[in-house]
Structures are given as C-alpha cells and as structure tokens.
Length: 76
Image (cartoon, rainbow, N blue to C red; front, side, top):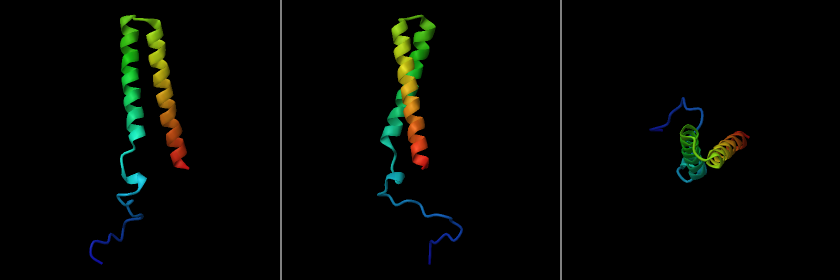
C-alpha cells in the first residue's frame, strides 16, 4: 500500500464534501464584521452621526452573533 499513512487518525474529507470547500457564508460574515467594526470605529472617533454609530454597532453585534451561533451549531 504505497501512500498510506499508518499514523493518521482520520482520513481527510474528499474534495466534493462541504467540509473541504471554503464556507462562503463564514467568509462573508467575517468580512461584514471587520467592515462594520471599522466603520463603527471611524464613526465614534469623528463624532459623526449617532444613528450611524448605532447602526454599525448593531451590524457588528449581529454578525458576531451569527458567527458564534454557526460555530456552536457546527460542534454538535
């Protein structure tokens, strides 16, 4: 058996399974989290419109919440 790794505890997932590909929703949620946190930071330091600061904070909180929920759901 050429190429068999006897010390590997599990086999890697095949290329067609969902675990092998990049999770697009996770990438989009992380991008949204970083962008909204940056916008919240800029809105805070410039003393801009308060509703913009609240909106950016809400988007940051929601995207972080969805990321945590997906992580906890994936552990089951």
